Image 1: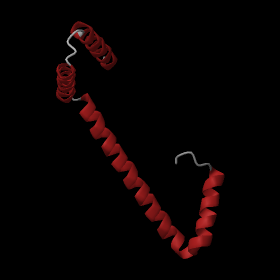
Image 2 (image 1 turned 90 degrees about the horizontal axis):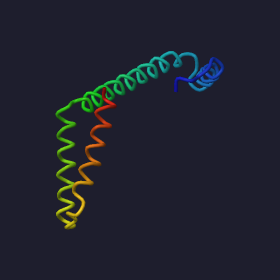
Image 3 (image 1 turned 180 degrees about the horizontal axis):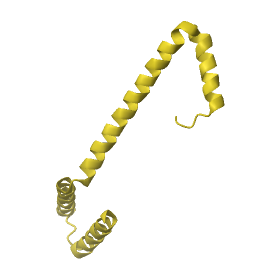
Length: 103
């Protein structure tokens, strides 16, 4: 959306002038501008909330705990208790990688 050159904008304005006429074009342009500003603001707010949720350590720890519980439930359901040390070592490697990426 932000990669419009001068020629493309001129073509859009000419089409708008032909379709809307000279009296309604300024009003329509203002409305389009307001709508674009609202969409950008909503996008920024959503992105900020998402980043805040991702960076919240309590949410991250709760998600990790839920993942551990799910793994334990799956193991007990399938009766596969033969490889617990291997699964824990993989989980600890993933945790170390994630912690290193946050630093």
